[in-house]
Length: 378
Image 1: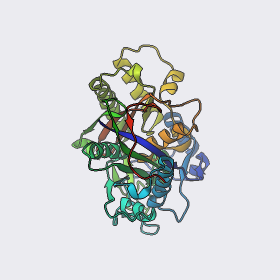
Image 2 (image 1 turned 120 degrees about the vertical axis):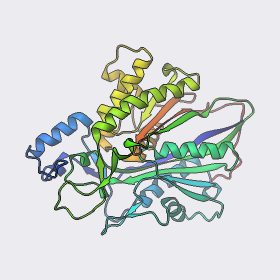
Image 3 (image 1 turned 90 degrees about the vertical axis):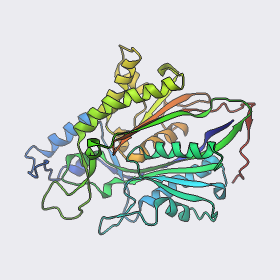
Image 4 (image 1 turned 135 degrees about the vertical axis):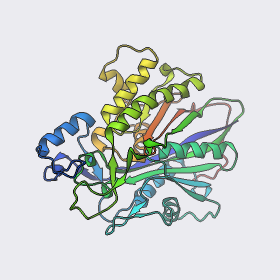
């Protein structure tokens, strides 16, 4: 039985730390194009109270989306110890491509995955690059696609990257711009054959796409400031609608995924959820707990099962979940840890609206049924 196993992970966090002082001199506007008269300090403090974001990361000048995706990819490949020429597919999750430093236009040609392959200097002509444009849910969706390719024996090793440079596409006159940040994550997913149907690796997943009126909850548009001409493509977010959608749809979907896998929430060691907004993420978890008749829980309990990075790293879109995963696996988020045999639930929500979730069980290190992947090692 072929199982899809994570053989390596990596991430990249920009060094530039953006704190609240960065926004004190901004001029914020409302949806009607009128300047908000409330003081920036009050706006920033209210924002922090809701999202819990204290800091976010921005890339330095001269770096592109494809550059940071490549850095994370190199780290994942090194961690996997799999020879890069044995990568059959590169699936790159993002939403804006490389952003031109002057025109601020998105550059999708060639694709980010093709650029990552080029920057990794992979010569294998059979290594096929795919871009996954799926909102903030792109990395998990890339993992889902990779699992299907591995199980159908179309590949042995797949590199899934996630990267975004949202600091290049935010409207500085929009309060919501303080949510977004830059970053990259990556994983190598490999086909490992087991002599018995041991449930390791990717166990189950599902995706839901509501693309009617929900399509416009998160989109692009001109600046809220009618006099701002730097870019016509800025993230435009209807936070209230997204929040309501998330609380209505995500908990039910995650329970359905667990039910289908014959698992209970108590079987889950950690829930790694897209770091979109602390208030929303906690509310999603609370509703999920209520579906299992949990009636008493405090913030310490929530934080124990659901690690959070948004406070220090902000929302880096597709990169939040793989970054969170890599930090825990590398022992960089104590006291959080993942041990062999642990089962985790990963979930995300993004533009579309698209939501997805995935159950993953980490293999026991000395599983007697495991046959080694036949790929060459570094």
